[in-house]
Length: 141
Image 1 (cartoon, helix red, strand yellow):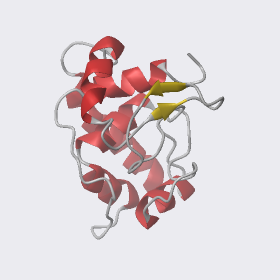
Image 2: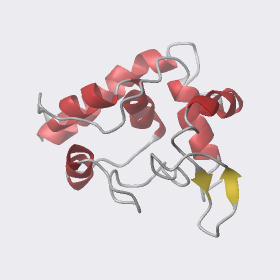
Image 3: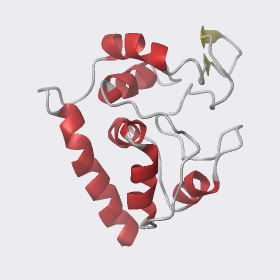
């Protein structure tokens, strides 16, 4: 029950990201904003097609929307793995909220004031757009 409430609260916290009148982000704008992310993240399809060449500090973000948090081929932090084990599956709203403040998101989701994220960067503007872009380049697109 605690996790259901936390998820509902996270969706509510994501509301400011969508307050500009869009129910979802703008994928075209998100593609441009993703330039801030590619120093750490790449987008490479399962077949090896490179969609966005980027760094390897962070995980490959291809197919992140709809994926359980903390389970892909990457060494995630313990708290992100715990969130995934507790049921966190990335959708556009919760991913947008996460990238705005990863540590605060995990602390709220896990109800643990000591939770940490290995992602130190905070994307203060355009988080909904980046989430929409990542949804558009996944396997379901």
